[in-house]
Length: 229
Image 1 (cartoon, rainbow, N blue to C red):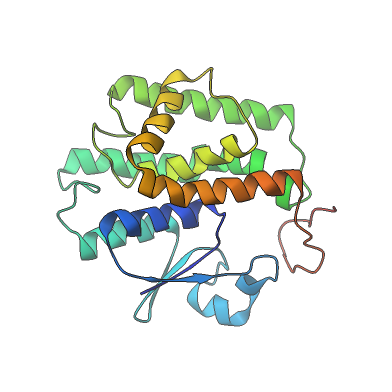
Image 2: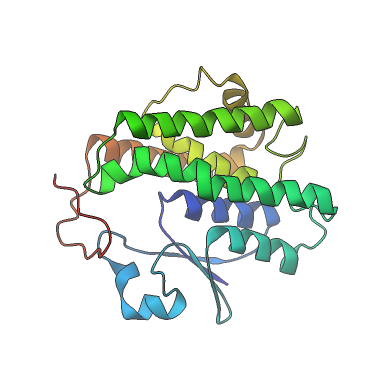
């Protein structure tokens, strides 16, 4: 099994956490984002979207980090508590996974990542959307009353939510207004240091890029305008 990933990308980090937690052996293949390796035709054979990460399970290519998380549990660890079999418990995990990808991380990515790597600005509107998403997550945690994102035990929903939140830490964004999110995030780091070490490495890279944006002048990207240093 191979995982094509980037070292600072939250979706890549989430899958790496899951592979570690599930104790599934794999080879990590670093994709050089700045060199546009993900934009090549060879990469497009694995993922026509040309996004990262992609899982290669002996020739079975699977993009989209959420699908990868679900696939790993269903195929290799079908009885894992990380992806509970009870229909309602699993539905909540799936809901949090979709909440992250469509709402939570999308607002964080637009506010944190896009201005670092592309020609976008941090705007009051972007900050408002970010705070709305944090407020929603705070509400979910309040209603569930649980230590983790969906239950009192760790699930695969926590991995992408953690790797999204670490982007905020990378730019020193305060979570003080969201005490339950702050406590959940601190709890994960404290109780799962072997998983947090994966995320911490990416967080530190993002923090460094925030101070010194990468030179993407030679990069080919058909959608986003390249950020000028």
